[in-house]
Image (cartoon, rainbow, N blue to C red; front, side, top):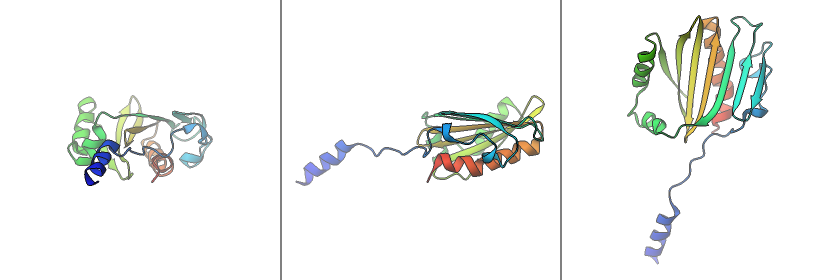
Length: 164
């Protein structure tokens, strides 16, 4: 009887990952609620949320996209094979002023880059969980507004998408 149980256990295959808790962004508010208020306008679609506030200080723009990235990056970051310092080196190869910091977004892994985009300040937030990818791009005329908008979204949107 025991060999049969062992064979059945092997046939069951690996456990499947859960991925993100929220896989459809179309129900999210577009009125600025996620970024702490303001006269935002936007559009929410299943895989994309776009917010902009032309009348706000710094005229911030937010673009959030859901996707997949199952090329092994997540596992390499989790195991430490790819460090945040190495990711920052890659970013700085394109823009020497680029900065990267790791984020505490468990059970996902994530990081945020900071860089200039023309005359604007920009942040890109990358969140990975079981191959699911959330990318947030935040731009503003004011570096402080870009950063505070990114930090607010990390506290409001990211937990909703990642789940527990």
